[in-house]
Image (cartoon, rainbow, N blue to C red; front, side):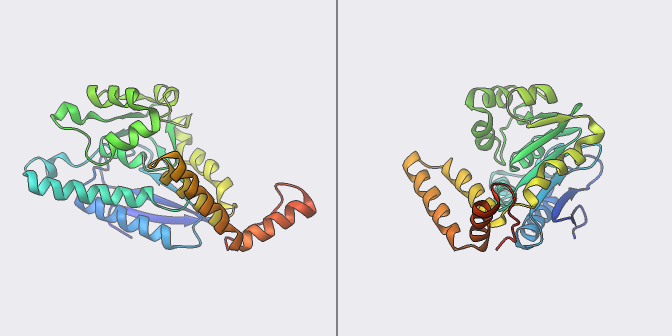
Length: 259
């Protein structure tokens, strides 16, 4: 358990909790602890789904500008590479991940949220990529993950202007998957992922990898990735029990062991 990032597990759901007062700014230590938390939940077979959460007041207001400001080109290149790697560790968690967003998710905070499979926002949440207002651009995935999620034109608008987007606009453009009252954000995130926690863990991992990797390649290559994942699942116990349950009892009644 880190000083600013901790992992809490209950009912097969892990919460990666950011807790660096006041705004969960992503400094080098937080970055390292995020990477460690991602590795922990990836390796823990008892964890079937994950929530990213910054607490009741704020998700993460961005990277630590005071830490970044004095850096030169070479230092900044290494700093950005390390942050990209840590966030990619989150994106590569082979389990369903939802970001539960209250308050602000800006800059690096939004880039962290983009690594989740789903985003639940509180009604008063604000998200955005304000780096252009500092004379730079997003450096931890914003120029790549954001257009893949909401399309290039909408992503360019947010990146070029640096403006903050409210929860309802985020929902309208596909940046949020659900908007709920602020006090209900964490519970809504749990309600979203609990349905996956009881699912076939190996098939969910394969589905996530097939979608994510398929988006990076041409269609023919993506179809080959899908075929290989699909056929490999016929070596799992969950496939045997799932299909047997379907034949004997109808759909939706299988109990999966994640094996």
